[in-house]
Image 1: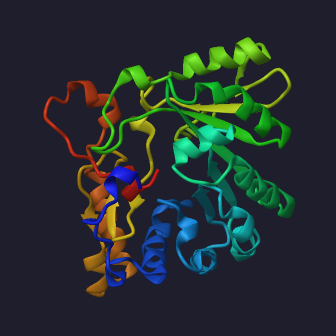
Image 2: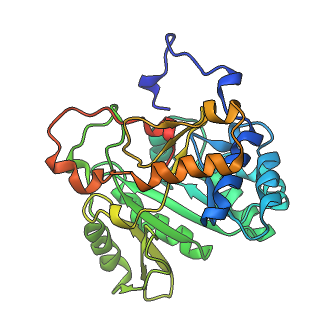
Length: 305
């Protein structure tokens, strides 16, 4: 989480307040009959949770066709990639906002290096685990990394997806001066690599719009600030403490932990989640300019990406 959020007064959740792997697996199982086909494990940093491969194995046992993905900062990936893959993980997304060491350490507030991340990526690729890279571009901070990151990913035959900087939570101010649009990013790439050719999305709910460089490499752009896609969103988020959120910008979630621990079966859980989803009205990215009141959305470090 951001350093300014972490101090002596910060209280971590007690272990009993956090959903167990079995409880999270029950939620997934309840949604499979409703058409759930993809599960993404995110954070925070999910590789910090002990025995994560056990959770992946539980998910894989539910359905051999379930698409199980993981988002990670990649620092611990070299150590865990093989056991995650053997447990049933389908693919990995690595969050990487800089390839220059000093800038990387400034952005991540850490002593790790991009080399640590690329070592994990290389191990994942070697064992056959598909990898994508996500990069959040903040104007005035890391737009200089667009070209070198594209080169590094192209050399490894990895898709890199550039994401417009978004305000999520109360620690970030919505400042359009900090937003580098997808169009501006593509102009940077055109100036260096030449023309870009748009590619069709595989599915309407895909958040990234793909473009092909002249060398055949593919890059993606997630433009949720300049081109909101709320209408096509099919993602719900389950927090570590058992609330389900229907939008990345939600101010509050719906408690599932209590329902789980009062003994609800999978059919009952499915009915509750279906009702929540059918009555959702979240369209924050589309409506944000019309909202005048002060909002307090949940922090990204809590809800995940």
